[in-house]
Length: 288
Ligand SMILES: Cc1cc2nc3c(=O)[nH]c(=O)nc-3n(C[C@H](O)[C@H](O)[C@H](O)COP(=O)(O)O)c2cc1C
Image (cartoon, rainbow, N blue to C red; front, side, top):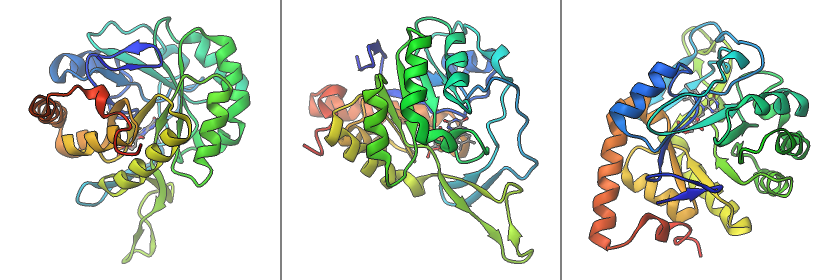
């Protein structure tokens, strides 16, 4: 059984943040029907946030999306224990170390806390606070006994930021968030998303994720959840070979429906059986 930051998972496949809405009943249904080892909540902020005006999601091409939903969520009141037959990873997003500390102290005991320092879609949150990674992690580690993961984006300084997160007490990393991009309507001569920029996700960022997971793993041998364009068991295995212990599935669920999870799990299981190995043997084996 894979273990990440001291927490065991029944298999390596979890749902990435922002895919299942922050509604206990929906999270429960996802766990029951599609059997992920864990569901990451959409990032919680202290106060409720509405989505940006539509359009907020746009399909760019085969398996490739851009979104600027803007971290809409019910705020701190939604941070409750959710009784489900899979793990829940609580994602939180604040604008300062103190806000992160406050949010972290509200996460129920015994769950992983993922700090969103990387969403590109809401000014003052996500990637805007990444430079404060050390202060944020220190504050959070002081505010909760839960293991802390830091979610980073595909930036040039990601290796440095990952090191600072781990030094400050993070038990693991989630890599990567969406890549900030823009799509322009050539007839209307204006950006397609109302927010103008958005986060690119899906197949077109997969190999960026593989490279970043590999580089960070080589540098720190940290516990990593690899996320980015996982559509098939091969994509998942690739992220594990790069160093990920768990793999997060995001856009593929929106694009292909949640049964894609079952297909990934089954394909991966067959691959392991055929090779006579277990999932942990793959972790980092492609980049040693
Ligand atoms: C519609 C949508 C909403 C998202 N919301 C969040 C969020 O609230 N917090 C977060 O950390 N990441 C969020 N993400 C990023 C995903 O968790 C993931 O890191 C990213 O999409 C790359 O994985 P993918 O290519 O499998 O989608 C969101 C992604 C999408 C597509």
